[in-house]
Image (cartoon, rainbow, N blue to C red; front, top):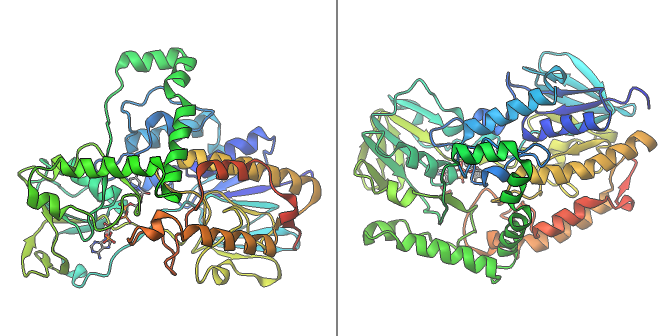
Length: 481
Ligand code: N01
């Protein structure tokens, strides 16, 4: 095929990766469609105070483009966004990105994809790579009276920077986001209230600074940076973490469990300690890492509120114990709808197959990458892939290695997608494994669970994922057009 064309949807971490790798393959006939006016995905949309990634900075980069300039051990959100902006320039991707261009429909017809944009324009491609992200659609709770609040109220992924934070601020939610915001605002807001329905376990973590000397050394000597990173140990830690999820009695699980228990015991105030004691196993929800939440919530101007929220009133939040918590600002750190993936985009495959219909109950994909009936439609960070306390960049790179082999075969031999049998077998095995993970057995609700209460994330260890991504099992792929 001489005019082989690829369309990538989304210019976040994964879409940029696809662009870089397509160029490296010599495929220049591609476009990246981005519905926003800037690259960055998650790191563009989240700008809340304290925004940090809990993956060690130097491991939160593309493996082929290290960043010697991280200022902290855990990367601050604005530095991550700046890193991706630099990558976008360095790999000359901007000319291939169409901003403010939302694809609303993709339809497989006559052996190619026909893409329709929100403004009615169309484009055609041989292959579509969906890089639309996982935690992208804010989950906004239906709390009675929300519309009546007289102050400022917003979801954390829609932070309103015009709003002053030195007044009375309420934060709803104790996932990674809520915890980071409390740490950032303690002592800034004259009164900071943390509304916590379900306390989470907190894994202690150090978040120091890199000195200018260290950064200069990493800049001058990439080998010193690689040595410092110790990739082998990092991957061993990731493996142990994933073993902790899949084998709750493993040493890894015991390590994390004990560290969380000890951390909670560091709170001397018994009432506060008990108010923050989770009712589920550590690692059941995605583990929250924080260097200082337990200290910050004890700041004289901060307060933990464990009473459930009854409603929001013009003056603040009324809890079920009758107390009115008067507030100027309410931040909803209430998480994301992790079941949407490419939706609301309409994706129509061969013979009228509709992704929305197939995913009505729960989204699935063969190895998180391909769907039967959807030839040449491949996903980065699609359903049932690994999302946990490790770098999604690393995960996306492994997935790209797999997709690249699919692309090469498509280019040489024509359309392909996973067979229905391959998906069925994979999903049966996946669900059986999912029910043995700590996400299922640990006694908690979380965004890992699908509508049927089954963990949707990759239920095996990291090394199995890496092994699966090495080479496609070609007998699991077929042609349906
Ligand atoms: O969201 P969450 P998040 N009334 O879903 C509460 C990634 N991330 O934005 O547990 C009261 O974890 C809900 O309570 P409960 C990371 O993957 C990464 O914090 O359902 N409370 C819970 O406490 C993370 O896991 C980084 O009882 C309500 C909270 O809101 C994912 O994003 C940083 C409520 C939601 O927690 C999501 O984290 C930040 C209601 N009606 C985020 N509804 C990194 O560092 C919900 N809640 C990489």
